Image (cartoon, helix red, strand yellow):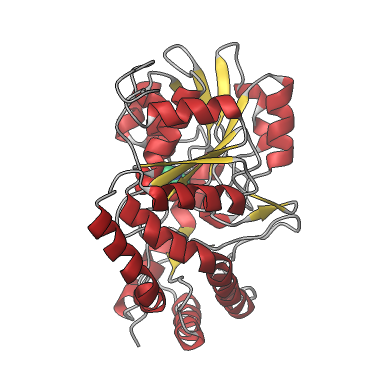
Length: 372
Ligand SMILES: *Cc1c(COP(=O)(O)O)cnc(C)c1O
């Protein structure tokens, strides 16, 4: 049996008939940039996130970068983030000349550890970027309490967690501003690049609107040096159709995560994802840990099962960030997780038979392991 890592062909069949007339309308009207459909999608996405405003941009990376710019974070400032994330979380800080400061993760959720936060705060710290890794929110209650005490801004990196809830509230409404990616393989994915800034703060909203559109207020009146980073109208048509079905698709992911857990939880040397009782998990990524990871990955690939590693190298050990002067041992939890983690096939329309095949294969591989 072939089990691809992701396969969104069924999603396309479901939305095909709905998006075609919408796309044709855009093609005929020619309103390709920030057309009405884009504005409508911003409104429905803000509402979906329990927030007041949403600003469509080019990518999740741009959403993060522009959100930091909207908060006036610049050279000389420090921004705290976990080293265990996709590199875009750090790049957005570097683009504006600020310094990324790493804080290690919790060993169970792989999210930023609030207990280690205070020791990283200095007089230069301006903001914290918790990442809702794999689709489960970080410990926002404690992170926001520390942020408030030190007058720091909180920027949610929600690029992997569209629709997840924390203490009943949606991610996107938990900090000062939140950033989403619509990269095709994300829980809500476009047919190309796209991203969104979500906030309930009017100043951040207005700054974001200007920043994504050349810093303009009127047509040719430019208040600040802005950028060109906008969400295409055709992507908004596709994303609107998918947003209507997102909760259902997230539930389907969670259903398949249950099958994985039931099959794998009792297997020695496999650690399944830990779900906190005050959160929901959208399982954008279904990541397990195993001590003999590289062998397991090779063996799964031999059985034609798609696997990936998110993420093999924590950011503090990346060459791109060698200027920060970190070394192995600086963030031991991130390093340990990075050496054991592996992502199994997960998408809304994966079948129970496919998940069963992955689990059976895994059990066979770990029970007959070699080279430990
Ligand atoms: C995907 C991702 C991003 C970047 O989003 P793009 O749309 O690819 O630019 C940022 N942070 C995290 C955690 C991501 O997973």
